[in-house]
Image (cartoon, rainbow over all chains, first blue to last red; front, side, top):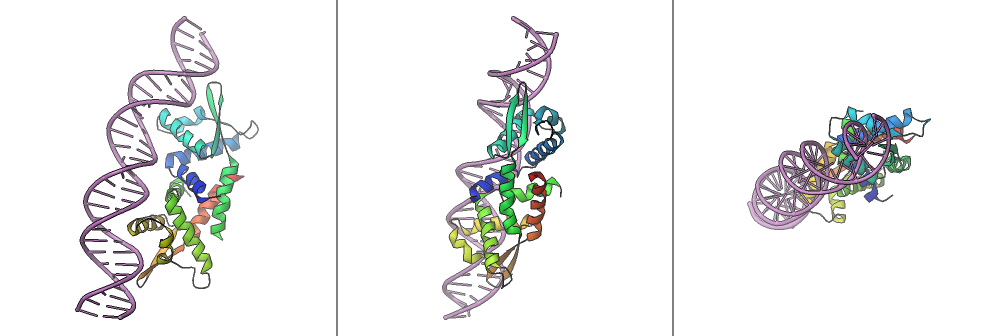
Amino acid sequence: MESAKLSKIMKALSNQTRLDLYLQIAKQNEANFETGCECFISDIVGSFNIGAPTISHHLKELANADLIITERRGKFLAARINRETIQTANAILSLIEN
Amino acid sequence: MESAKLSKIMKALSNQTRLDLYLQIAKQNEANFETGCECFISDIVGSFNIGAPTISHHLKELANADLIITERRGKFLAARINRETIQTANAILSLIEN
DNA sequence: ACAATACTTCGAAACATATCGAACTGTAAA
DNA sequence: TTTACAGTTCGATATGTTTCGAAGTATTGT
C-alpha cells in the first residue's frame, strides 16, 4: 500500500469520537456474528453524547476510508467493519514493529 | 490501551508528510542496525520538500505521541523508532482484524 | 394522508493544523 | 572569534475539522 492510503486510514481513526464509533461497530459486529455481523447505528448512538448530524458525518468519513461498509435497512442504517482495510494497515505497521 | 492513546498515535500518523517522515526514520533505523538504529535528520530532510521549521514541528508531534525518540548528537539530531508504541497500537488493531 | 422515526444535508461558528519566513540557539570548524 | 551549519521558536496566514441547529428526505406505522 502507498503511504497515501495508510495516512487516510490513520486520519479516519485519529479523532477520538470517530475511533470510538469504529470500535463500537467492531464490537457489535462480533456480538452479532450469527446475523451477518451488522451493527444498527440507532442501537449505539445513545452511548455517544454528540448530535446525529455529527455521527452521520463521522460515519461517512469512516466509510470514505473504507474502514466500514454501510447499508440501509429500511428506516435504519447498518454498518459493518471492512476487515480487508484494517488488515492491510496492520500488515504495514507490522513491518515496522520487527 | 485506552482509545485515547490510540487516537493520539493515529493522529500523529494521519498527516501524509509526518507519516512519510516516520516511515523514513524506520527505514533508516533498519539500514543502520549495526550502529544503534539511528537516523540523522539531516540525512533525510533533503527528500522532503518542506521547510526546516515544519520538519521540526512534525518531529515534535511524533515524539509527543511516543512514536519516535530523538537525541542530540552534537550539531545533529538523531531519531529512532519507539517500537513499544507501534507494537501496542498494532496489538489493538489485530483484535479487530480477526 | 398523517405523524413519527432515522438519518442526511446545509450553512455557520469555533477551533485546530500545516506551513512559512524571520529571527534565534547551539555546535563545530576555520 | 568569526563563520557556517543544524535545528528551534515565534508570529502570521491559510486551510481543514468538529460540531451544531435547522431544515430536508426516506421509510414505517396509524
